[in-house]
Picture 1 (spheres, rainbow, N blue to C red):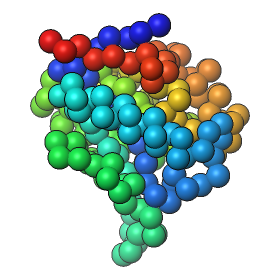
Picture 2 (picture 1 turned 90 degrees about the vertical axis):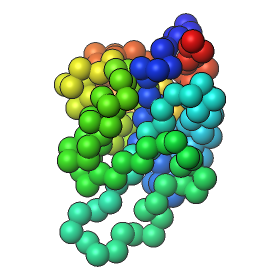
Picture 3 (picture 1 turned 180 degrees about the horizontal axis):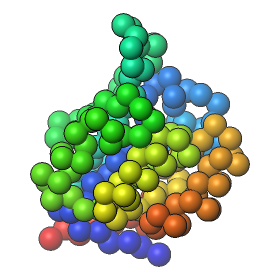
Length: 173
């Protein structure tokens, strides 16, 4: 089922698409597959002049981050918003809510790694803040298939709508 979303009020939120995380052994799909799907979504959002938010983590209280802690090269583009978090979720202490509200965003479309960690933690906070939530199942993966399936099958349907990337369309108005 196609979900047509208001481009002005919708943001794509991609969580932890960092080199070292994308390279992990992941299930039910490899990080490279998730990255390709996420890049396609990001391009469609940019083409519709809709906001793309890229969240990455930095470990707190260490001087140098591990190798591969930046976003995958070429993922961040002009006009995108990069958020650096120090916790599992992307809202705590980052200014993300203020950034979204200042742009009139009320709907968030999620993808990233790991489904049940960074994505779910960020989405739960977003739900608490009143955002409408859309979860793109094929733009996510986890450390195990069971963790991914639990989030997709049990948790996310209670928080929002689960879709496939091909079902996400943005209004051109």
